Amino acid sequence: MTTNPISILLVDDQSERAAMVSEQLSAAGYNLLAQLSSAEGLLYQVEKHRPDIVLIDIESPDRDILESLSVINQHNPTPVAMFSARGGADFISSAVDAGVSAYMAEGLSAERVAPAIEIAMAQFRSYQQLRQSLERTQQQLDERKIIERAKGLLMARKNISEQAAHQTLRTLAMNSNSTMRNVAEQIVTHLQTPAR
Amino acid sequence: MSSLQVEKPKLKLLYLRLTDSAPLIIAHELGLFEQHGLQVTLKRETSWATLRDKLIGGAADAAAMLAPMPLTLKQTLPNCEEELLSGLILSCNGNGITLSSDLYGKLNPQSDDADGVGKALKQFIDGQASDTAPLTFASVYPFASHTLQLRHWLSSAGINPDTDVRLQVLPPEQMVDHLRRGDIDGFCVGEPWNTFAALEGIGVIATPNNALMPAMPEKVLAVTRSWHEANPATHMALRAALLEACGWLSDRTNRRDAAGILARPEYLNLPDDVVAASLNDQLYRKQDMTPEQNTGWHLFAHPQTDHGRPSPQKARELLALCNEIAPVDTDTVELFHPDLYQQTLDYLRLREMHTSKS
Image (tube, rainbow over all chains, first blue to last red; front, side, top):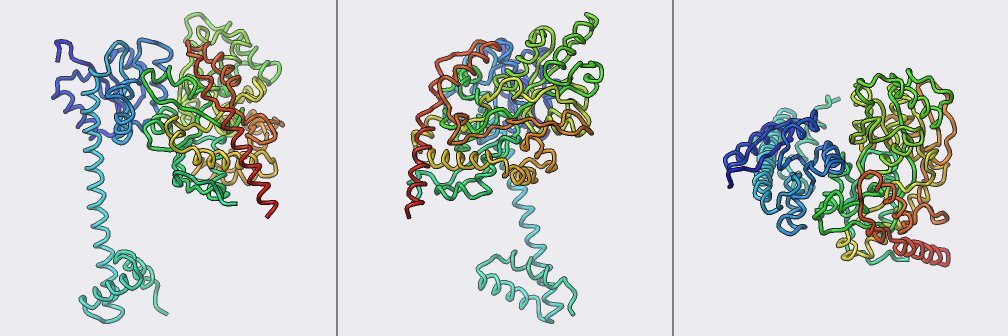
């Protein structure tokens, strides 16, 4: 890194992810100018800080505002980095995949900004994985809960043992080519309605 | 007749929360994609830049895109090697210019049409003290028909769009909120957002844009060049299904049904009436007013008209207008493909002949 580190403005409404990205970028020697949670005041911030790179969530509706900057004023960051670095298509599809978009100031070479974008991409991706694994854990918890409930209802209504209730669920699932969870949900809905 | 030998039957299409996304939604709901051998998933996006990037990045196959976007790609993504092309203009017109109720209340226009409101606005701006902040108007993207139409309307009234007012960009679905909050004084956006602002009493429609520039290409079916080259038959099937949907939409008797479908939560997620107005050529300039007839607010493609045919001439006209905003390259006019459009017409005609014979 030269004596004049690349300056970055980060726009991300996921504060946890923003923290991850900022930390890694700072650790790599980049100058993190500001971290915004929305594009509220984005124009002002860009004007004030004159960042070399703006990193922004690809899903942000505020991206069109940034695009207008580059058209109106050639000195504002243009959305070129992710499209030119490392020869195009692959880089952009992995950026799209990770959910990052980047804008870079005129006069910078794509090669110079690419490492920063790669750091952001990596952090966006690990945040994604974190979220997914949390969701999976939650799903597993939900599944266990509903199965336990179905078993309880079966035990009470049919007067059978826990083991037998478990066996019943498994058999039903196998016979109907369905999952334990689906069968359990059906049983809960069915047995919840008061018996006539 | 068997459908085309499509290279890629499963497709993902992108659209924004706008009335003229109708061809995609209608083709989906009427099962027209299936009739051409395609299984299509629709995905709603919130910004034009995201829609474009997902298309170029290969996260989607095609998109309903602003007509000037493929032509001006080099200006917004200077180093992008991919190109976007179109073989079908989905629709023309569909936009309007709305002023905040607050601003409108100060104007006292002699007539409530484009001309009258424009003149009154000019007078108002001229009468402002020199140290007051300029009025702010928003459009949806730098190179969009909206920006071109807004600039045209302002210029026609003698208002310099670059010096007399401030122009900025906002995503379509944020327009009404920003107008409500007073961040902006007016906007140019696609329907249903003008009608929505008017019916909510937040704004007054100064003009529907078909009154300014009749039959201006609005949304095109865009794909990347590499996708087109890898999937020519799929592309044709897609254009055929969408042209049929556009034809269905051109029949005014279907517009009620179309509005009901578009209004659903998974699509525009707005009240039926808000979506129905422009589709039924009804112009509600302001709250509690009986609607005026505004014929041709949306002109969808149709095999019997020229609205759907993309041509270098139409591209040239759009680029000439874009050039007033910022210098643009004009060597992109061939990205509007009349040959692909003709192919679709031929294919649909052959298909029809075959069906009527058997």
